[in-house]
Image 1 (cartoon, rainbow, N blue to C red):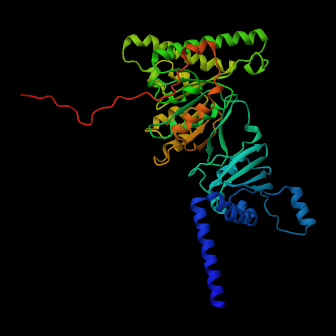
Image 2: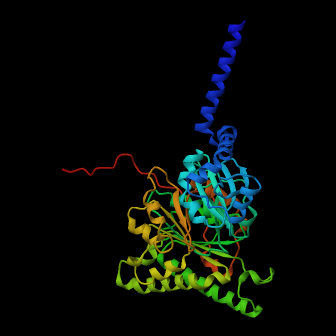
Image 3: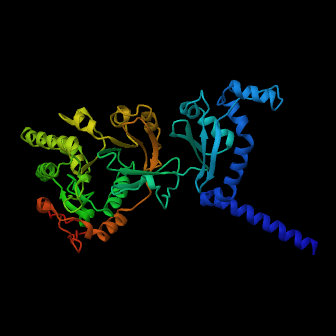
Length: 451
């Protein structure tokens, strides 16, 4: 009987160890919640003061504090003062701690020591975010959250809004969102097979669920955006159609400015709900197709399209028209007006690129430190990108995997939310209910008989 009991106990221990090993590899959230988080909390509490001291994140105490320690506590050795921990809470992806910085420390000092803190506490990464003056938040992740992307179920209240779309997951475990009221225009760059199309699918499916009008410009005969036709209010698949559509959009912008002027306001969201036009998001799939021309006779059309795009980027935010421009490369080599247009596209997302110059085009002018991060994206991780903004901040993100069939199904489900805009009616795509039959080709090509 004792031998049987020992065998049962050993089998149970082996099963538990095997289950934890499986959870660590296949279900990292479960493993972190059961094992990683309790261990990290104990290690953080036990080694916090010494870790801050060796990392150079302590300051000499004030004269009053030193006087109180020597005369009230009766201690001759006065310890350096580390940042005071205000709150520590765990999550399914990591742990967060709010620190009150003492006089003499700044958030940059803590950020510079983030790699040493990561090794000291045995977590995957440590990110430092300034909450308010004098307070920083340490966002620690227990595992690589970008390996298998799982979006948060709920967004924080500060990230919610009528034009907020969760698109990807940041490396600190928070959601990366496109907030068109804060960052109206965006530029997405990436080489082939980098995950740029996956980013577009997540963006379009998120927008499809909102009360906005979607306008597609896909001069590759619509191969990328044709499937989203049920949710699109307009679609241009050739440069000629794109030129006409952009001209109509400029006219729509001017009419909306007349509405703002009549009501004495300067922003679309200040209008009464009854007269407020629906916001429009213009999705340009490959911007180079609008700039490049094969013959001199097409240069006039190109200049006209570029002028319309620049006008929309400069003024259309106030009337609720937003641009999402995508491409493989985007710079002055495209021609006149390219640099002027890029300067208006505040939100930047750069996937894996083929050369450093493309990374400089996307992020070099707003976040120079992010250029190196783009060039180190491995090719076996499609969807990983670097997102930056005009404030100079940047972060690594990754979009969740979504097939083209899933994106098409979501657009069909929310097709009833596509607004009918009279000016865009000629460009409304025709939705086919049945697939177009493809003529069968013989397996063996006929060979003419020769004498």
